Image (tube, rainbow, N blue to C red; front, top):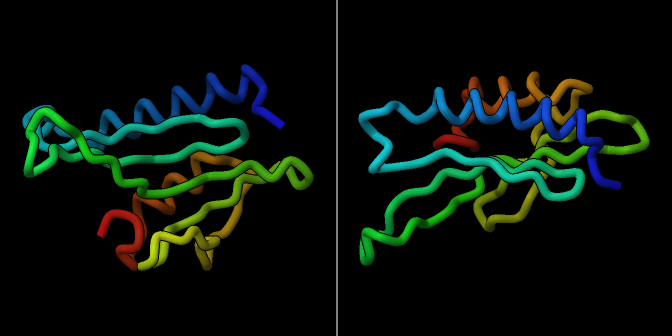
Length: 114
């Protein structure tokens, strides 16, 4: 089930602000932080220029947030070393997606931002 328009607008506001803060103006030629909403998921991406073709940007998904329609909670996923998505422990879910975005930003394990 897709997200409501109200929820999509809220997510756009939260993630646009987050991405803007993660990209200092003087580094915008070196990397970008973007998000996409697909169905009931939000993916957070980091993009960097290809070392072979500076005009081409390479995308790397940082985190995945999926809305569990039954519990009406957001579930946070991280990618393991084989790029398989796993539920992130110890903070796997929350009703408020912005709280999970804070978890990604403050992660001490380095699984999201390295």
